Image 1 (tube, rainbow, N blue to C red):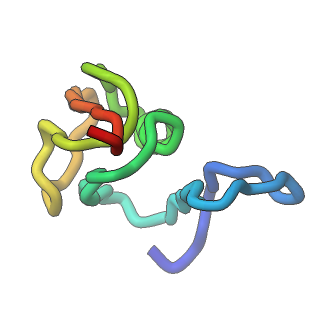
Image 2 (cartoon, rainbow, N blue to C red; image 1 turned 60 degrees about the horizontal axis):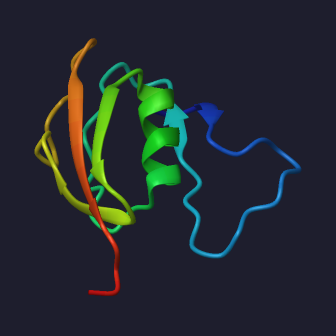
Length: 88
């Protein structure tokens, strides 16, 4: 897209180190990014902005996602996420 229509963090809000700022453009197609090593909070923001139905298994950071990176996301798609602590 050529225009940002929404973002995960409101203008003027603070962002913590390592947190992702997710931008949604006016492009009609949403392509699945790699969510590996994303935090639960970042993934929930992404799911909210893309209207994905997301389910989580575990705690920590993403180690696996059910929708392959590069896939066009369809309305009503369900995304299963596996999370694990970075310290193991």
